[in-house]
Length: 109
Ligand code: HEC
Image (cartoon, rainbow, N blue to C red; front, side):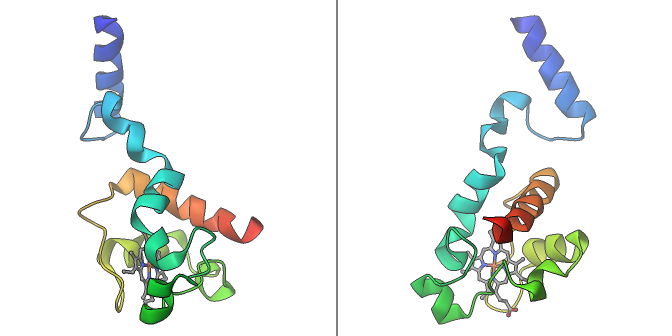
């Protein structure tokens, strides 16, 4: 068991992660989205929540967003944009990529 843990730890260090694998439970993109983004962007990405409407959050399913590159989207989420706060300190780069992949799935839902 201990060996296994050490292996996971080693693997995640190799993958450039700062936290051990045992603490990665929250890296599920759906959970990250729910915890950090739904308030303004709604569960379906529409931005029709009251906070989203008040702040003019973008519809994440719209062509305007979807046509941007992954790098553009990661940059916007990392640095924030307009009234959107920055998430660079909160979401790890690896999770950021998964989150963008999750946003890509929203129009298909
Ligand atoms: C406090 C409300 C708020 C929260 C929380 C929030 N956003 Fe936003 N988001 C906005 C607003 C407002 C905009 C429109 C910004 C603008 O273009 O002025 C936006 C825009 C965006 C854009 C489009 C950026 C662009 O280049 O046009 C993306 C992508 C995005 N948000 C993703 C996310 C993700 C992912 C999260 C969660 C990690 C998140 N947002 C959390 C309010 C929020």
